[in-house]
Length: 229
Image 1 (cartoon, rainbow, N blue to C red):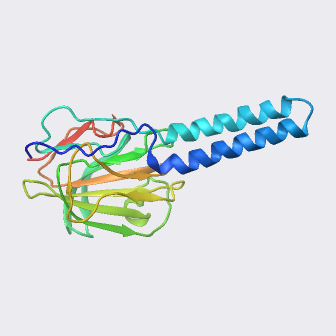
Image 2: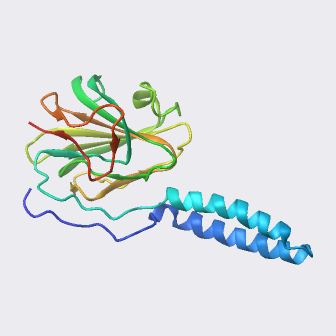
Image 3: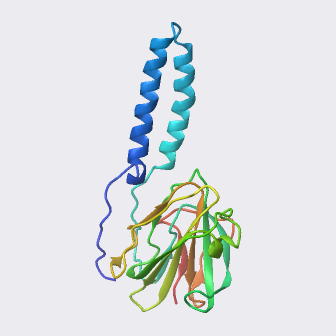
């Protein structure tokens, strides 16, 4: 697509977690000071700080957002939209938009993974559609259609329509989608964010060649998951 536009903001902690991390850190410190004033011993203070400090660090790890750039030509490449593990690589019926078979590649994100999502291809956003639904475990096959999800259709420079689906899981109750209809999009840009365990599906033409296998770990914006014909 020629010279790609870089719009990434250099952030180490994702902006979706800034308020939560700041407020929770302030609350922990306030309670810690209160414990010091109430008790003569410092033991309750240190027990509280160690337990809730560890929890805060786990949340901090969840919101980490590494700065990544894909090295090389992106023409006809499909990169992983998320960190995680490949749980589906198969031909599947997609009856909501395409009404035919597509090559479906699904990536499951555990709570320990980075939860930022990236655009898997260069192109233009055709539409964005959010669908309310259930909260089945994200790795189950029915989660793709029945769970709450956000669909992003992207048209590549070659005219291929690629569907990306952000899926809420049993714990994830908030899907954030940054993609906007009619906007150009590029690999290296953030597509959105999903809180806690979740999944991202990519629906490709059957002519695409999968480059990953079930169980393979992926790195968002780095791992090539397929090549378009």
